[in-house]
Image (cartoon, rainbow, N blue to C red; front, side, top):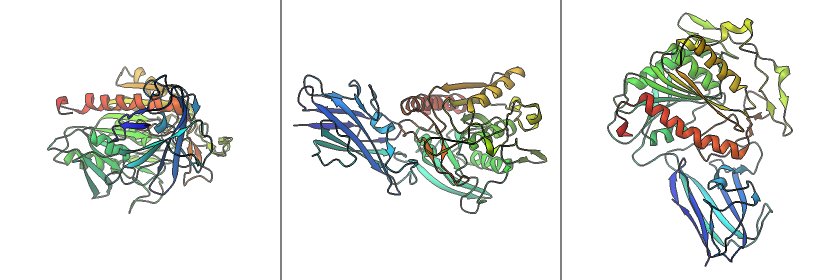
Length: 419
């Protein structure tokens, strides 16, 4: 009897799953397919072609895929190679507390290429991928001007505090914050435009808003003092770096594929205004998919004329971890990280470090998340190209997540044994 097992069948989304098949014919060729529906009903799927060993077994920890959406030994390949049935969809978990993503694994005899497989399913298994753990709390935040969601681990605490910032999509994005909270951090997923009564469009970066959020987090009885961390991506990473430069509350910053200068909108903090470096719409390129490549769209922070817009990273008191995807098609993030590190070194400081990943794209997310190569953005008529090779991007996500947890534990936790 053919059996397909996936262990654990229910787990946090950042945990690996061990997939095995037994009871096949010796050397039988099969297709393994994964599929899920997101909360909007969009379908994502992946498939790979495998050959059973001499005793009719497959173990994805050891058995290579011959073809399909990936090739070689990739125990979690069916998860990170999930792609949208409809082009340019991004897989994003909205309700992180009450439901998982349900991923159906189906096993078929022989090699199946068709989109609609009419062959009989030999074996099936449903895997639950959760974004919150038992006892984790979500608290809606509407205090002063601050809007967001605070995720608290189970227990009395106090826990190291982190602010989580996403980029130009706006709204409130919670899946990374809830996963970090499941790992022992008190995390504020912070909205800063296009959410509730916040401005519908981003017209300027008011750093006092982010300072208010940092103070609110530090004032919570379950949050450790005296300092917090920031994890940030894309436009959020520009803001995260500005917080590291100007806010004493920030002692550990993770910058994922952002900039080292102010672009598009001015930054204001008390009496200071930093004007943005110009952007050049005529430098936007179109990918073969029709998506827009913004990598060359921004002005150069090395240019003498733009120095007033470069963030004074030498003022940062805390540690900064730059995470770079070398195949980022949205911005030249490696050059920005290198300039920031050069600036630190030229001031005799060594509180910055870079992790650079060949083949990784712009949207580096928690491990086993599928690569989003391109997706719509409300500020542009065409989808935006994010870039990335699926296998290299998956490797970057898995490695960088471990480094993110290590970095925050090293720089934020007073008693590491509690984590």
